[in-house]
Length: 207
Image (cartoon, one colour):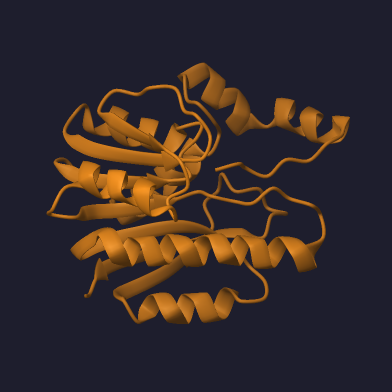
């Protein structure tokens, strides 16, 4: 899924100065977003051996890369995105829109009959800079991700997704609580302070 983009030299300059961007390059990660998942996992311990993980909107692949590197082959990861993604070890990539039934069927087949232990999403829409346009788009994506989690998670599974605070946010958290025993909203240190992005972490899925 496309990540937020802004034009102009100031954004590029900020990227170049960003310590997480620089660290990601040194460490061989595909994007700075990896540190958000790493910091969430340090607190929540979501990533564990022998799990089945679904990565929605996966490209360029840093979240899948983190899971496969941490678990060293002891996991099955299914990544889905409209955009192409370079291969990763132990990751089965499905290119397409997961709302499409054919793509969803491929994803389900890759996940297997037992279901997923974790569904994660760092999806965001292309940013226009107009909050009245961007916020509904972002909420639509997280609602789709939550619906997908409900369709593929096994009982007791977990769900983590990026959410932008604003209209619809509170209702989304309430909705998530109807399906999970524990729901927490976090802002990792790697999230930029000025950004409205936070992460919803939902544990112990109940059918």
